Length: 519
Figure 1 (cartoon, rainbow, N blue to C red):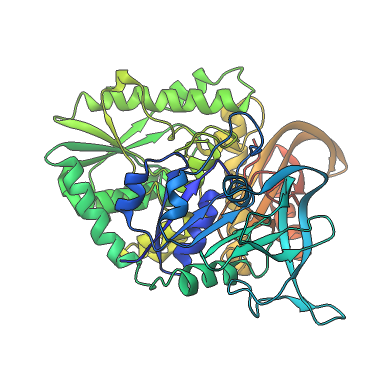
Figure 2 (cartoon, rainbow, N blue to C red; figure 1 turned 45 degrees about the vertical axis):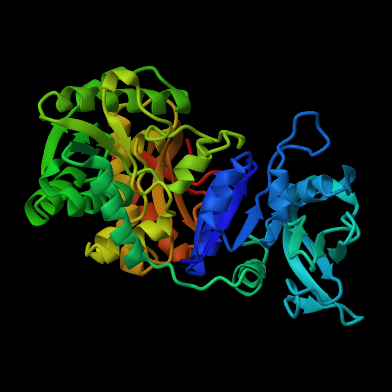
């Protein structure tokens, strides 16, 4: 099987590179930048990509690629910091720029490099190809190493793309992996397929076989516990593990009082009765609500919810003989947002209760069969495993549940109001056909009251915000341009049917700068 290796220098977008390569049906893995060269050689990659990163190459302690990598006769592509370290390590120069670029930029392609030949968004008056790209840098290449030429530039960044075509080493100052670079996937395809000579021979059915065999080998005769939330990630993880080890899996379904409307009944019906998966139902609403009293900070709330989950699992594990593993539905975006990648160089955005290992007191090893997959890949895996599409295609639901969608202190009253409002929003999205057009949609409870008028009387009640986004990878997202009529109907229903809410707003923030969830 053909493979691409990604060296991670700490970029928030490293996993996006992997996602784009997998979209081409080519297998790839991410290694830390300082990985032993022996491991690189053993991997036998068709090509290597250097990710971006937050550092500057001229700093005293800066990440460097292993020097030997430049002599392996393997095509290399450096992105942003990745390009800068190629230049720096091969004898060129990089300096701080007085013209930083963050966001959209237009660049001109120079000459006819193998990487950019006939790839363009438009032409200028002189007939030169132009590309719309996404920049994120404060440093710039000022002197090229011997044997390199410029293949892309603009006024702010005269050296925006480089190539040594004799050695098949390339670099871009922009990010082809993000969707904002319109021709980014074509560029990555050109490198992976044409320059690296990779065959598109990786697919999800093959991954299923590999994943099942890996779980069998890893677990052996041990018993596995899995925290089942009813969300897509934990549901797919449960079925995958059940396919591998059958009754050696016991799912623990914890009702923390922060689930969607009728979630508990649905989960038990689907998994226990319909799919034959062993499910233990634990109603822990009182414990969670008591422990969350007076807590406003979102990180504290996540940690408390995660801690309580661990304590409950620890207690339940005592009742299950030979329980040695705790399985979780951790996926790639969870890992990168928690700075949980191999290098630990990425900036932490938010903690995830299911990322970063387990306390020693739990006495369970961690099993994360989805850790290398993106959300859409998880859905594809679920379908390959035979799960119903309406379950697999459900919008994502966070592990801490409504706990991250209630801003400020969590109260049972707030959760009940939010549950009802959210159910109405989802129902109207489905009726209008917009549920399948959006990637994630939900309602957020705001801990503020506003004055309203109902039946000629004054009200002073709570506010909720509707949130709907469109994304291909959940690393970046645009707000969904829902029809006014849909928003109006949803708002009217919530205000009329949910006593305690008198105002509804709609969030039009993208990711970045916002996250998809509020918190």
